[in-house]
Length: 261
Image 1 (cartoon, rainbow, N blue to C red):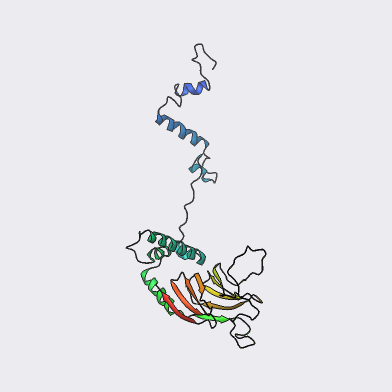
Image 2 (tube, rainbow, N blue to C red; image 1 turned 180 degrees about the horizontal axis):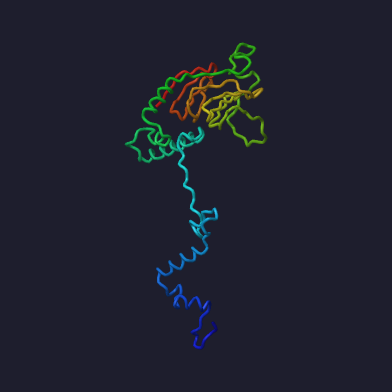
């Protein structure tokens, strides 16, 4: 319709306004607004029988499929290891703030990985019964002079503790199936390097000549946390997420003693 004198004209569809009795979205009741909205949505819905379920939701987006619940048995070994690692860090953080005083050690980790009390006792008994093993990969366990393979070469000078900015890549040691948590050079001479892996193995590598793995050490059931040599390098200590601290003989690979919580 056109404008009327005095500013009382209508802008829009006059017939539709007359059909609604002059009501607008500003003057109609909330119930009537809902009715108009539902009629408009029903008008754009796809009729039944077209092989489409869009009529069930009209102009709205279809509902999302429910997120499937993942069981612990469906998780990979890496996923379970990450959950346990994350739970152990969270438990340590809460204990440092005094929030788990009444809970047993490792209770949060056990709940995260779904370990029952009976399973925990079984795992502990298996861990205590684990035997330390080691394999030597070098050509000979003694040098030409009959000295142990861990003895520093005669032409190897004692290294200082001064650190320098790296300038070039010298060598890459490959052997661990997962990440490496810690490395330690052999005391004083640095002709060997000890590595602790997240694959629960410890390896010792040559640095002075060929750069190959000379011996590996296996006993931990879970990822390693840290390692450190004795002052003379004849022994070293390892600790892992299996809550065990082990003392090793570097030369023979023998597990000397084990402390577990």
